[in-house]
Amino acid sequence: MSYDDQNIFAKILRGEIPCKKIYEDNFVLSFYDINPQKKIHALVIPKGKYVDLDDFTLKASPEEMVGLFKGINIVAKKLGISSEVGKGYRAIANISDHGGQEVPHLHFHLFGGESVGKLVG
Ligand code: 5GP
Image (cartoon, rainbow, N blue to C red; front, side, top):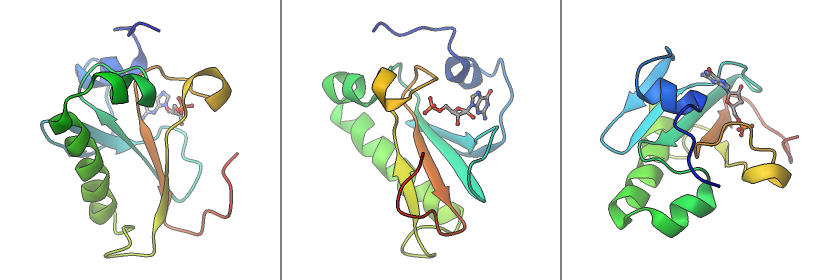
């Protein structure tokens, strides 16, 4: 699938749509999900134009890959849910149709602030 510049997260990245920002650096933007499924529900997205995790894995630079995973850890720490400073969380990325992905810009969901159980969905 080719990247759709009109997807909602592309618009958030361009500042065309507001978000409740948690963190931003050269590689990632993080903000709260508009429809939280757990006490804490954050999203972490790469700044590059990647449709999903497979697209990212195939095309992203090593720096972008490190930047995304470091970004997840920074956000989790900032929210007080990382295993280092808190009680942990679940990070998931939905991928394409069978993965239930709705927004075609790679994003990790961070669920925490309470026990999230064995499975999501
Ligand atoms: P997906 O199903 O693609 O993995 O997750 C997309 C997520 O984006 C959903 O949890 C949905 O609530 C969230 N979302 C959709 N539109 C917006 C928006 O405009 N702002 C924010 N903050 N989240 C959104």
